[in-house]
Image (cartoon, rainbow, N blue to C red; front, side, top):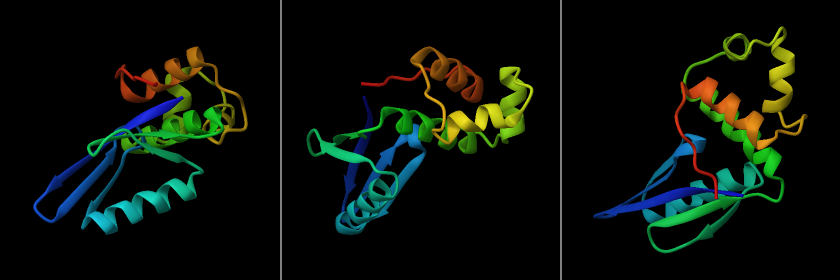
Length: 127
């Protein structure tokens, strides 16, 4: 399973984005790529470049990637654990946080339900 990232170059600047992870890096090409590599290392991600403008982010642990997407999207949408818990109808924020921390396996159906609740029904494409 992977998610897409993009690279845009303008003059001497490079802009790298991974929208699902709400991650972006900019600066000189060397600096932006260095930041991307540091981010990937921190989150145990593998970067596979498709061409000069796109790349795919993978991990050996798909559950960890799904958990990271949920956490980054929750923060992007300024939601607390309690907010998500209420949207999902859970009685305790711990039950949701176990998914977000990668402690519980996430089925694609459950991930889709959680992602939709967090993002107000945005669509997601995983490869």
